[in-house]
Length: 296
Image (cartoon, rainbow, N blue to C red; front, side, top):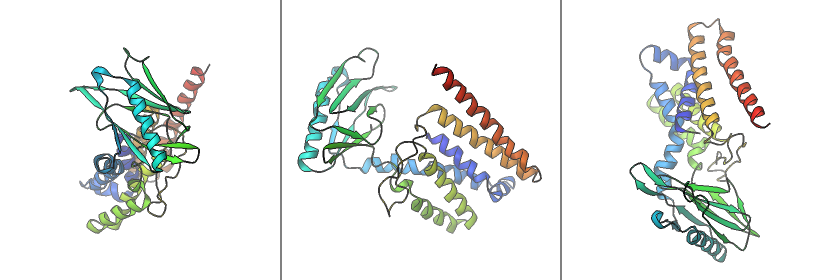
């Protein structure tokens, strides 16, 4: 999910605690501020720190003014060959290239069967492709296609397996930062500076990020350090899905409104529940109808 989505979800979780609303009404919104920050902290740890300390074996740096997809495809093939010859993981970074202050050169790499397919993602050269063939087929733990767009560029880790090559997308993402243990450690630290209630709010908000990410495909190492392998996601949506992000922000906003309503009118619990339930059902029905019409 997007950062703003996790931020809103964290605030929604905080609103479920009367203490957070009471302190906000008295002029101290610290619970909501911390909860929103905790909602985005897991990804902040990954993309602001861990991605820069990850060891990179190969860097794919294209020449955007003379882009040759065949050369890049061959570079990737050699990395795959090296991975199996040494029987060690090999990590590649698909470096992004900035063409101007507001424009980035965009290209993609796909792993299909035994083929490595590279192409430039532009209207002018979208048909130009480079293809290299590996000895063993590829098994992708995420999407088969990875696109380099902006900033430092994504990383791909090649893992040698018996009879195939496993392709992991940004394997440094959703590790220790997306574990319940990390949530517990941070909540305990916050509880020391504030109080146990604020610590519980922090833990709940942090966990909202972890649980939302589990709805996607990649999964997270939620039981790190006891189990450093990622627990598979439920594959209900993609993290970049516009609908999934807008829907989550909308429901989070409704939850906040409902909790504020219930705080002011404790006897109107059913109406507070309706504030969330009715619009949520309408949004889901709209999405269902839209998908039904588009599939015809």
